[in-house]
Length: 222
Image 1 (cartoon, helix red, strand yellow):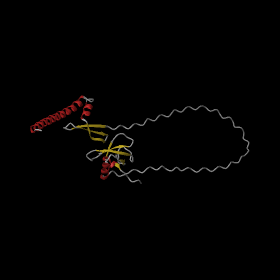
Image 2: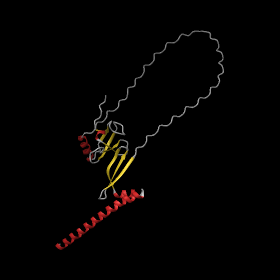
Image 3: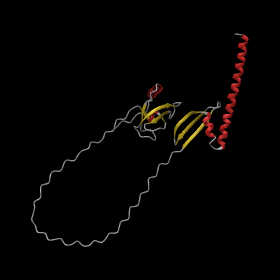
Image 4: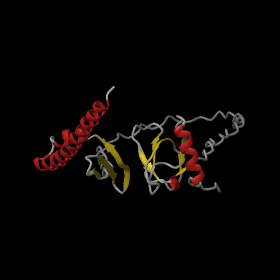
């Protein structure tokens, strides 16, 4: 019986962080605890999200373009052993049959076969209904803003969070909001306007401080 693959230990996570920081995306493999992917499939680690809770390891499965989030229990550094192909056993060749003795027996001519009536054609078998496609998982996208005008986005596919608190430019949020309902655009523009006013006030304050410092420098002379 094959031993079940163990998940990542804290030391394994530190090793993956070091490899990624040095520009070498490390390889991992999915355990039987991974949801939605085949156990033993490989992937590349692309990033880590903070804090280290739940699905904080971002990976890209081999052959896929999407980045998904997984927990340490769903990943392992142990590469699965290659599957062995079953050996093909060829059946022994049959022994040649002994020639049957030839008997010279007079056989009368066969009587003519009775005329066959045409058989009714059988109806074609009914086609089986096509298998239903799996229902796509629901996707939830959440935009969050801070008092400083910074934005982050969260994406949840079904019960799995695939993106957590990823930073996004405020200009991109404003452009996307204008393509949605007016209520969405108004709410986002209100947050952007408030952030603009705060930053403008800060710029004016810094400009006044700079002018005051320049006057003091001029008073000191060259």
